[in-house]
Amino acid sequence: MSSEEKRITTWEHGPIDPELAARAATRVILLPESAEESANGAVYVDSTQTVGKLLACGSVPVESATPITSSTLLTENRSAVWVGPCLLISSLLLTQNPGAVALALNLIGGYITDLYPLRRQTPSVSLSIVYTSDDGTRSRKLKYNGPASGLSSLASILTELAAEEVQHGGRDSHASGADS
Image (cartoon, rainbow, N blue to C red):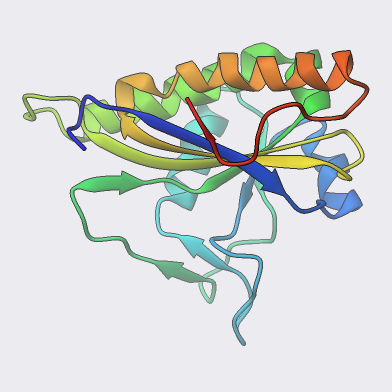
């Protein structure tokens, strides 16, 4: 895949913890790399703290799913592709503050572009988003692989998912594993 191609894959994701879903109603939640925890707690992607600070400085309400301390394990991804943390976005946040989601994606895209200023092409990015219903009972995961400049397109996809949820009473009509 060249750095100008983008691939967005979506699939059903399991239910989200109701307490976490409630927190996501008013802010973007930075999720650990996987649902399983190590003996030392949750494992986050190494860009999680940077993205959290970036969003907070940009006035996007944000917090991590669990506190990130000096003992939190961070995985370092060494590749030509920038790997971001998984973002949890609630349908309530998206409908009540859609600007926050669009701003978050634009801030991340701009940061990555600024991080690699000498590249001839836009840097490649890998970013996941879990979109959840207000109560956390239904969720979908989106996986984006492509140029940093294409991150902003995820806002409209999330808006479509929210509209679909309202239109179909929470039933999702996308086929699992559909590509955009």
